[in-house]
Amino acid sequence: MKRIFNIGGASFNSIIHLDKFPLPIPVTIHDCEFKETVGNTGAGKAITLSKLGFDVTFHAMIGQDIYAEKIKLFLDQPNLNFIYDIDPKGTERHLNLMNQKGERISIFMNSISNDPAIDYNVFGNYMKSSDYVVINISNYCRNVLPICKAKGKSIWTDLHDYDGKSTYHQDFIEAADYIFLSSDNLKNYQPFMEKMMNVGKKLVVCTHGKEGASALTKKGWIETSAIRAYKIKDTNGAGDAFFSGFLYGFSKSYSLEKCMKYGTIAGGLCIQSENIANDSLSGKVIENEYLKYYA
Image (tube, rainbow, N blue to C red; front, side, top):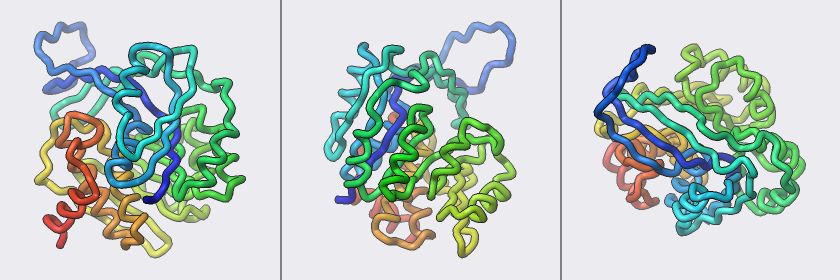
């Protein structure tokens, strides 16, 4: 089993599904689908990667509250070692408004501390013993970027809906070797991806939802279409699933074209689930889906 150290991003979320987003006027909505569940980028990757057969160690900040207990229970999964530090601000919580297109408005109801007083050096041993290191863009994770570099490890990161100019993301952009992002807020994504390759990145991947995904390597562009057969129930976690499916293929030394297809499958399986990872996901399932759609 390949070992992964994945750090940053676990929350307990309230999710409201609407036919369409409300107009910016006072309104009462009488009918909606509502649920509460674990979410966030680190948790999504941790669950999906563990289901795909990786030995995952995942760190996040949580509180001493009922939401933290729900997260710990949710992450009590095979192949998944959840380690955490306590944040006095409490567990991170989001309110996600979803429409029928799968678009999302995310409101942070409670954020974790920006720079918690924890021992960051303990993560060095996890990094050293891992085949892959995934550093998510939670603010406290900035502090582990130089530790990872000092261990000689490549950094995988996910910029999510980066807009091409946000200074918040800059430390992660500069440190990362493998970059993933979406084009939600960066419609003209090609120049950014080309710039990243010009400054020495090994790979940049940009997802476009139902329009597929693009990758740029030193050899050029790779375009992958979405699989239309996957029907949307909930798009939360789809980007993390794509990332995880890609890394699954990458860990097996598949071609990058094939890795993109595995990412597409994992993302497609995720949107068919009401959770941040499809409950039925496994290495066998993703391989069977590959044969179904691409063989």
